[in-house]
Length: 133
Ligand SMILES: [Zn+2]
Image 1: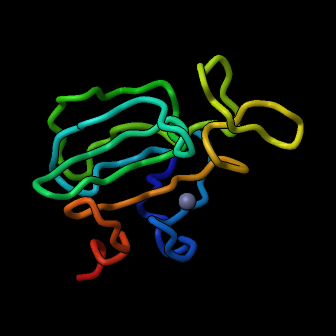
Image 2: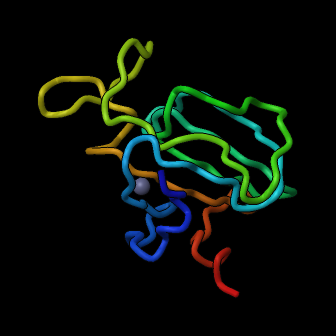
């Protein structure tokens, strides 16, 4: 499986983050050293992993519920921290998101992809600035 972050050139435009089309099961890697501060289901984000570093929070949304990290884990840049999730997830209490067939979805999503959001001091920034060098 490919590493999703390497597919950034195919990313959509900014909307509190970017969407990166990728196959279910593709690796999600830490874009910087940091601490995992959340893993769980988060409304429209579906299954979500949050990576925190200083005043920055990086959220990976619509991920696989098979988490390989948990809150408090220290991770290194480039480390695999999870996987792109499925479109449909079942048995999540309170999940209000459904597809056109009425099947529950992994948050607000129409198919497997990564939504990458970055907040600095609580305000969303365009994640692509992190990749400009
Ligand atoms: Zn998105």
